[in-house]
Image 1 (cartoon, rainbow, N blue to C red):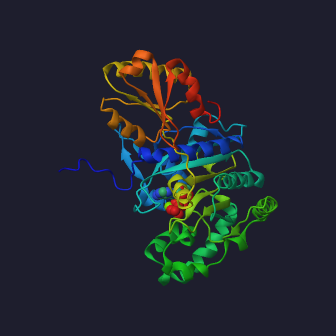
Image 2: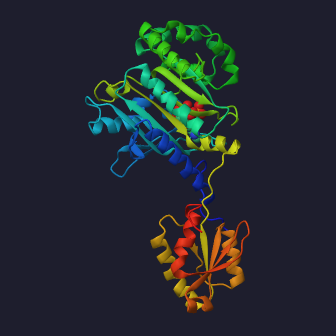
Length: 428
Ligand code: ATP
Ligand code: MG
């Protein structure tokens, strides 16, 4: 038998048994972001290719080998967004949101990268992306981190730790870059192919190499933290002080450089050791030069992105108590007359009880098979109508979980009786 058209590798269907988890997580994130005054923005998934080349940088994994780039019918080169910051900044500029204004924004949705699919690494994956534009100080860096820490706390997550670093200004990084290039040039024979290529275009990215054979060489490289400009040092110091005061633990990781070109000063990553090698759950940093570089007014900014699949995997591995959204009730209707009356009754109940989840048996079936379906639906009660009940305008109300006897309730009293299933304790 043909299996039909195959899905694309690394692009997953999120099935109904899991969408409740996504929705739950999204609602918690929405609530936490709202509590800091961040507003949602919704952006296109496709942008001009040039936007990503100019922001993420030409010599990065993403732009060199991971983008889904295509020509549209008008001959324009477009790209499925591999990340959200570039689009966020583009939208800020094209909508004039950044002239003498500050913005706290967030968005969520799929991102696309042509990577090698494996657990926690997909070609279509989801991010929640948070950005604060127009804020220069370490106070907002702290806010960004506190916000994410609050989210972990709200979710009761354990085994997630914060790594911090400062990349300095582009000027101080230029000086450091020279030192780094000369160090790696002195050890040219020990560089792998990727690193040799990066040596000219983007030597800092060598520090980010995931090749274990490069570890020792990288460990011996000069440290960026020894070459930070004074202002960046003060900025970093202040951030660390606020975090200390707030009781947020972190480790300074001088090798943390992040894979995109636009970062400056603060960079950070929330990592876990619970998800194998795909341990980065939330990553971000400051990008003070990007808005201007993309043609907008000079605007300091900072942001982070959560990998939603990885966060969900972490929650699952810690047995997070996801709420189960089964129907409250299942309506069993036996016989033609009951089917007709049942549909009308169900509509009336939905009118009277907003939020009441009532699944109606459609497609007939014996009493026994309908009761089986009712049970499988996970509903708390079955409402039962046969011809006899229709004649007397009543319904049988049978608890399906936790015992209790079946009762007979008139249609008029039914909504009142069922209210207790929506707001436990309110019914009788
Ligand atoms: P990694 O080092 O794991 O490749 P990254 O530095 O490329 O991550 P970012 O570009 O900063 O990641 O994206 C932010 C977050 O998005 C990451 O911390 C991670 O949780 C998630 N993420 C990145 N790439 C993928 C992917 N291919 N599949 C699933 N999640 C991803
Ligand atoms: Mg990556």
